[in-house]
Image (cartoon, rainbow, N blue to C red; front, side, top):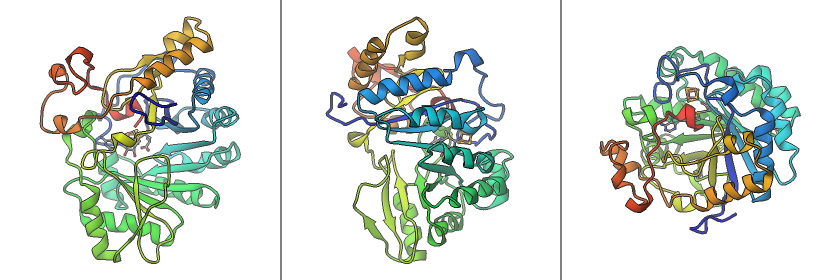
Length: 343
Ligand code: SAM
Ligand code: SF4
């Protein structure tokens, strides 16, 4: 369906848990996030029901995310339930890859179309620092296992941070030279702990990569579900993508909504606003009513984020009056960490 700004909304990111087996410094506090009671998390039947209703209003692609989606038991079963819904054309997964090797076979058998694996560096010591103890070789085993399925779309997601060695980005990008995978550099967003880190823009990374790999060909065709801009360097099997939500705002092309693990349908990552679908489901609402509420939430999707204001140091919680949506339509900025929203 289209929102009030005529954007076509066809993609839903579904968080299945806010727990994680890693503690990336820009995403989760060292002690983890306060545990949500299991009974407060949507069941797989509830998630599938929401996806079924979403499919009737034009959501055709689903991304399973978290927290770490593979820490929730039975994830391949959920994937199959969603894949079987008429109108859902694609189901993909975003994971840190640690548990991928042991799950990939079942995921692919149940219809997984693509997997994004988050790896910020190929330096194992630095990886352990960023993830607070993660083992790079486990993520790489997950990657290798994914690459053994030639029909699966495989992408590496990496969030470059100020202070990293340029060689780390060159090494990561180099994976797309020898393997059939894309490497995407995601600019740090000032969400949760991300506010404490300085990101690096895709423009800067692109400059560095051009010096190493030569001039790239820009890929004009629409590729992937989102706002990434892709290029291909000479001799590369895969593409390099840049997702710059801060330095190149792409809200006018935003095609997505998010479902949190507790069942809140969020129309925009930055705002706290959303509709409590769990409450509707558990109070006995029928599909027509839930559908109506989903339509309303999507229709009212905010025009754009205002990350620059967060970056400039204004405390969004104290600064609600300056919300870009206007005083009469104030919405609190999101205060949760990315792992709780479903990044
Ligand atoms: N655990 C899974 C993973 O790491 O891929 C899925 C959830 S994680 C929140 C999804 C993606 O969000 C990861 O690629 C992570 O690097 C990214 N992310 C987390 N916090 C971010 C931030 N503040 N800015 C940009 N990306 C962020
Ligand atoms: Fe976990 Fe993913 Fe957040 Fe890292 S980025 S802490 S792997 S949810």
